[in-house]
Length: 81
Image (tube, rainbow, N blue to C red; front, side, top):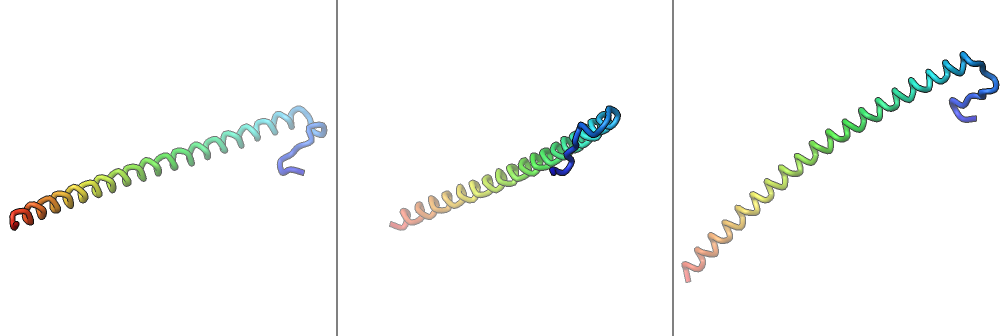
């Protein structure tokens, strides 16, 4: 038998109403938990994206500086010849 399964033939109207109210409350709680998890994950993803964007900018800056140094050294070497 599944947990939470109820044989409707054995219960009466007020019990059904109480059961329905309980199930609705459980569904609302489940929805709230799902929304909380969703928004936490969304915030985590946004933070991670920002961190990766900053890291990419840093690497791009370092690459540009390296290219400038290489170009400068190439000019120095050409000047020696």
